[in-house]
Image (spheres, helix red, strand yellow):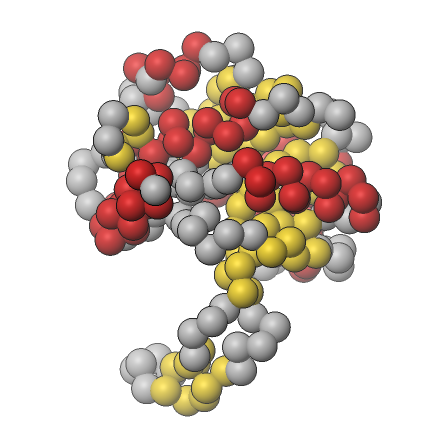
Length: 222
């Protein structure tokens, strides 16, 4: 089977610092987004990769991968969900789609294969996730602890997240503006669709802060 991947990359990512979007910061000789795209470019079952870019993006076209035949570009939106939706509309409703963060550069092929195999076997949407191992606290508005939350059954949501494209579009359109859609799984949850968790590697981190950049560099060198 052939699959399409969506990479929403229209965000700014100011928390990392610098004067360019975080996906264009470099780790060694390559940008973060080049690492994020690499597993899908190399995967034999990924037919197409749709990257959602900001209208004023001037960086992506200068990357060596920009002209790769698998990669297609669409204009993204103000929020992540808008960028995802712009790409989903370019994909056949019957197809399965994998959505991956532009700033998640450490995905391993083994996890990608594991997710695809699980979705095809169960016929249900699923996401990569890692179990929570730390003690979890809930706070009030003043950062006072109000409760220790049991960590059993708690997971860190990762990407890629894989769903039937038509169903994902329906979920986003139905719930957009009504709920806080932070990832594709949340849209499906709010829409009442089951989403399964596939345990993945905890080093599949998203770069959101400067220290994440250093950690990603460590993992990639390893």
